[in-house]
Amino acid sequence: MNHYAMEVEDLTKRFGDVVALDGVTFEVATGEIFGFLGPNGAGKTTTINALIGLTQPTSGHLRVLGFDYPADIPNAQARIGVVPDESNLYPELSGLENLRFSAALYGMPAAERDSRALSLLERFSLADVKHRRFGAYSKGMKRKLTIAAALIHQPEILFLDEPTTGIDVGSARQIRALLGALNADGVTIFLTTHYIEEAERLCNRIAFLVAGKIVRIDDTERLLTEAQEGSSVTLALDGHADAAARIIAEAFPHLLISRGNHRTLTVSASGTIRLTPLLRALDEAGIEIFEARVVRSSLEDVFVRITGIEAREMRAANGGNAQ
Image (cartoon, rainbow, N blue to C red; front, side, top):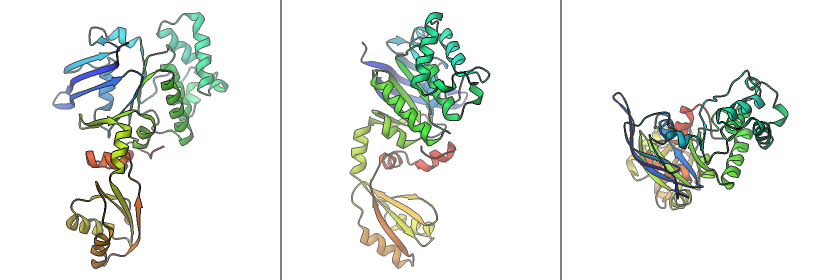
């Protein structure tokens, strides 16, 4: 078996004058969960569309499951499953009927379709609603059935584009558990997400994508170890967060400042933060500090440090909080 499920070299995609992907290069090992992390417009969906053969790159080389693109795209497509950011199932069909139809599209023999569909409905806790119209499903149920449809032909790779966006916390947790179980069964998973916490929980490796370029690829454990080498302090203030941020930026330019609300700030550094000079500078400026709390650094801190993009900005752009 090829050690790499996917190999991407110098992938570039232009839409007119817009450069959506700019020299993207990475490999995904067989059997890993690989996370593509970045804000809206970074190029995550364009990357997936190139890997599943829906868009032709402007330049670069792609190989999926040992098949070279574009010549071998049909051979690769028969062995991959795709969960798009918006469901591609039919609202007028029931859950069972949608899975039967998906199985037929992949050429599965009629005698096998029902048993495979019923098995997936059971695994995804949808057996009780198998005869209900898909259009009447909740958002979480729709997401689970869309994933089930992508698995109907037992693919070797599963591509998921923002799988938990816009669904309730319970469904998001169940989907993450299902993805972990699928990966344990040997399925390679390529996951795009703007939820940093989700990538931290699921992924073996993570690529940070910003404005069509990969700015960092690393093992999740190494990134988390790097996070622990830094330090962060959250300050609860008397309502003058803007003024406090300006004072800290001028007096301590090595510190990274993240805004919470008009009463809180978080300052981070790659090393130890000396609290006494920081608090003295704010006190001398007449800013009252109610609390200074040391917080554990996370993957979010690494992301902000590498990209300069606030995680809360990513969540706001996608219409929700982390699940």
